[in-house]
Image (tube, rainbow, N blue to C red; front, side, top):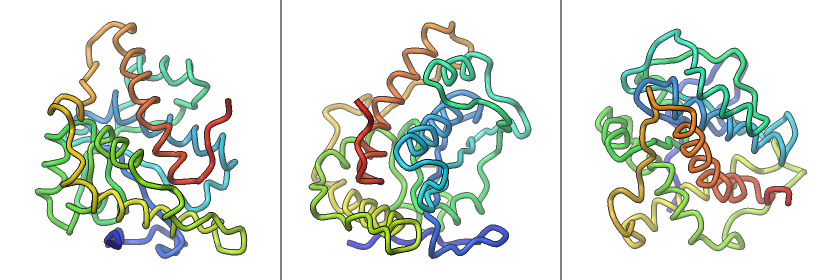
Length: 220
């Protein structure tokens, strides 16, 4: 199965065929999705360097606090991992974000349903983060295109699209042991200890995803 391309609008000076956009979605876009966005970017930087091979990572919220900074505890969690919390601005999820995204990863099943309900053929490219983690771990890396330095971005855009297609094909066959297994709970208003536990949960969920996207394992 070939993943449907993000249907949209290329950014200024951007060739959409050479870019793979990953959109992380939560509720307010001040806690979970900023943590996930910045940890995801950080993991890509550690594996690929600043170029990131055409992989673009963004976030938005279904009830996004437009223009708001991330929560202070979220920034603290990112600093714990060496990720950059600077210059973050909250966004409300818009149709154009879903249209442009090649992969949407949500914090919860409810967020996933909200994204899919917006249309734009988003169903085959929208997963909860933990759901995508589960599916990706079941995919044989040998079935994915190898990174190729001769291709623009090292061939990672093609690899990412193949990965999403393979995950979508598995979704009906590899179910969660229980519904809660696909959820990342909201730490909004909670103490820093709970934020840190959510940060650890997100980081662990992201690791095999980033490895599958890039073909590069995390450093020991």
